[in-house]
Each structure stands twice: as C-alpha cells, then as structure tokens.
Image (cartoon, rainbow, N blue to C red; front, side, top):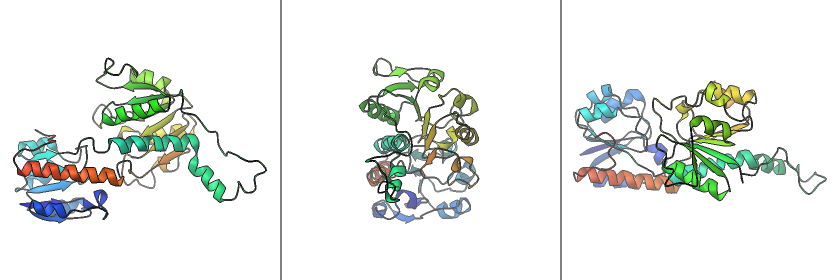
Length: 318
C-alpha cells in the first residue's frame, strides 16, 4: 500500500514524527503541494493524507488507485466528499482534537483586547515606566470580563468549552445554535441570532462553514452589534465579509476584532483587515499547540489503522 501525505509541514514542521506511516506501507511526505502538483504526486496512492490541498472531483478522476483519504483537520471542505463516496473512497476526519486549544486562543484574543498586555509590555521596554512620575500608568482603557455578556454562535465542542471558560470569568453566556439544548444547559440563554448580536458585549463564532454561514458576519449583522462590541472569529474566515468588518472598525461601529482566520490564507496584502483599526490577527494558529498537533497525529494514525483493518472510523462521507 502506498501512502502519500501532500501537506506534512503545517501539522508537523519537524518537532513531531511521520515515521509511524511506514508501519502501514510505503510512504512519502511532502511539506507542501501546489494545486498543479497534486495529480502527479498522488496518482499511485492508495491512501492520501491532506490538510488544505483541494481534492476536487476532477482530481479524483485521475487517482484510480485511491481508496482512502485521511484529513489532518476536523473540517472536510478540502475534498469533494460526494464524488469520493461515488467512487467508494472513504474520507476520515479528526474530530474534536483542538477543542481546548481553540477555546484558549479565543480568550487569548479577548484578553489581549481588554487588557492590552503587548501594548503595555512594549511601553515598559521603551522606558515609559522608568520615566513615569507615578507608580503605574495605562495607555488605553482596560476592561473587566466579569458580568459582561458573551454571545457564542455555534454550540459544538469548542462553543461548549468557550462557554465554560466564560462562566469562570463571571460572564453571562448567550448561545445561538440550530439545535438549542435549554434543558441540558439551563445556565445559558439560548436565543435568536438577532438577540445575540444586539445584547452581547463579545461575540465569538464557532459554527461550520456552509451555505447558511458564509458571510454570516456582514454589513447587516454588524450593524446590529453594540458600538462597544468585540468580535472574535477562530472558526472559518469565509464566515466574515472582510470589507464590511474593516469598514465597521474604521468607522467606530464596533470596538475591536480578534481573528485567527481570514477568508483567504495567506491573505493578500490588499486585505482591508490588515490595515483596519483595532484589528488583532493571528496566522491560523489556534490549533497549533504541540499537544494539540500530537493529538491530531495520534488520531490520524488511529484512523489509518482502522481503515487497514476494515473498520474505518470518523468517516464523513458514508
């Protein structure tokens, strides 16, 4: 059996190992793969491992030996699952591996905005404290999270973890989800998207990307937010209309934004969010803690092993 990993670097830039692949067959790991290189590299593969390489129906037509695709992610937008199913190709994902780290990153962004740690640390290193006539100073307003309202759009494993952490900060929790669970989570308020947008001090997205959520955060939905609102997105970049969000920031329609994902990655230099006011952006790293990636690779191996034993698991297209 031949195993080809088209996207090895992002999951494992060298601090982990791919040696375990050899237990299951001949393997080759490419750090990155350009779109026009996919067919040539994967044409003899029985098993394909991908992250962001886009596997279309046309590409699948050119991979006659392919029987299995192992995703290095929870989302499966990178592959045409319908076409894979029609060809009898099993596709497995990695569910819930990044829950703790993504939730942690949500609050890293929130706390950077409310506490301005980087700004004040730099001020101290620039000797502003050394020359200050007082024992303390602050360069921007600071905020408490206690008694603030956080609105969580989407209530999967990450949304649930964010809600739990928010409670530890003393926050009120509003939830918008297609599948309310008031009886199981009576401590939270399940509400419409409109109520969440208008009443939340902080809004964070944890929903999948689909026809109902693409550009969910747009001119209309942003206009319903408080002018003091903080918006966070660690889910999918295409959930946000970049231009509308940048316009809102530059015109003081909302207070600040914290993003770990953008609509195009890497972003073009012309992306308006790169120059928008009060816009904090990290380069899609909410999943990248070494513990998180170790967990991902462990599940990736478990998925491959299950497939080779005829008992595929975490299948998303059957």
